[in-house]
Structures are given as structure tokens and as C-alpha cells.
Length: 283
Image 1 (cartoon, rainbow, N blue to C red):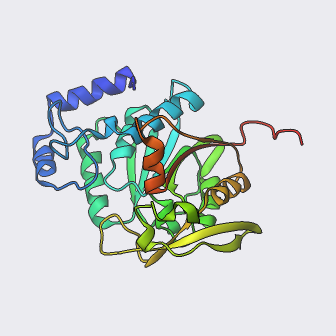
Image 2 (image 1 turned 135 degrees about the horizontal axis):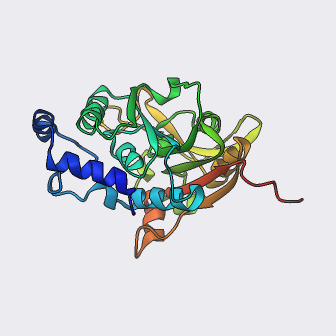
């Protein structure tokens, strides 16, 4: 990803002349998910690949370039369930003005450390909130919902909220678990925690789903709900269309050999949805 030159220069200035008290605090803080660069040679997770090298990050960057253009200055992004702020940092590094939302206090504190360390960069803010209670008055050009939707007990309603949060002409990046069909359940890594397929409706739309047992003691589990809902592929698509996204692309090609086998094993799908950017297809 070719980062904007001015932002890269600002980052390199921070790396050359870091705020040592903040850097020392970051060195002593245990990050459990995101390897964020701190200097040219250090990161928040020593020995781990940087978040910039993650297939997910590369997919987001390439989608932004393809659908929003090479110059992202002046565009806004919302990173929902941002954990330790790694993707939020990468979105800012790409040129957007970013708001990350995180519900866990310990993760939020790490986000604030990253924001303070890179305060010279500006344009990177965080909010401490359960995403289900987060109701900003404004919308965003790019919304990132990565590894979040499948932790909710009402993901169908939240897809509607994703539509509200995305500006007209904006882009949603969604990566989530999708309920496997019965024929694929046994090969799923999560089969022991998934219920049988169930059916229901959401806003008049028929949905199919499985319930997933959550262990809320884990640091990357749901917040408050002891089970979550994984919907099938068609339910996700129909709900996104209903939320105002009229072009939806499923991403492939970011995980190398055996990608489809991995996606089936982990029941994972990656989508880019565009809101109201094209007229509907003729019937």
C-alpha cells in the first residue's frame, strides 16, 4: 500500500524522535491482537507481523483505493469494535480521518496510548462504547465492521445500523462468520458451539441462522450476551441490500493457497458493500 507521502513523513518523524515516556509505557503494555509499529524496528507485539501486512488490512486498503480513489484526504472512516486500534491506525495512515469505537476498557486504554503517541499525526480518535449503544449524529465515508457482527445476538438489526452509519456513496467493509450449511457443519472449526439451523424474519426479510455459544470471559468474545447469531450467506446479502447497499462484492485472493478450504473451515466471508452508488438493475 503506497501511503500518502506527508503522512509517512510524519510517522517517520515520530519514529526518529519518539516521545520516550509514552514509548516506554507502550513497551510495557501487553497488546494481545494488533502489532502496530512504534519505531522503524519496534511494534506493540514484538516478533509478530505488523498489522499493515495482514491480509485483512491489505484487502481494506485495496478496496478503499478501488472504490474511493487514490486520494483519501478529507474522507472519514468508522472502525467498529476496533480492539487495540490497529486497523484505525492503518486507516489514518491511508489518509482518512478516523473514529474507532471499542467497548472493552482495557482495549480502549491501549487505543488512547496509540493516539497519544501519534498525536502529531492528528485525525485519529477513539470512543469508549458498546457499538450497539453508539449512535453518532453523523455518517462516514468508510465503515469497517471486522470481526464484530458474529458476536452480536441481533446482527440482522445491526446491518441496518451499518447502512445508517455509511454515507451515500460510501463503502462498508464487512468480514464475519457465516452460518455453514448442514453439509459443511462437521468440517467447521466451530461445529461444537453452533446450534442447528433456525429460521426467522427481520424487518420482513426471511433469515436463516445458527446460534453460537459465547465464552464471555475471553478477551475477544461478545460483551454481555452469552450467545450470538451467525446468519447464512443469503441472509447477509438480503439485509445489506435492504440497508441501502446496492452493490456487494465478496473478496477472494488475499489468503494464498487453500483459501477456500480455510474459509469453509472457519466459516468466514469478506464483503465490500457500496451504498447507493449505482442505479438499480432493470427488472
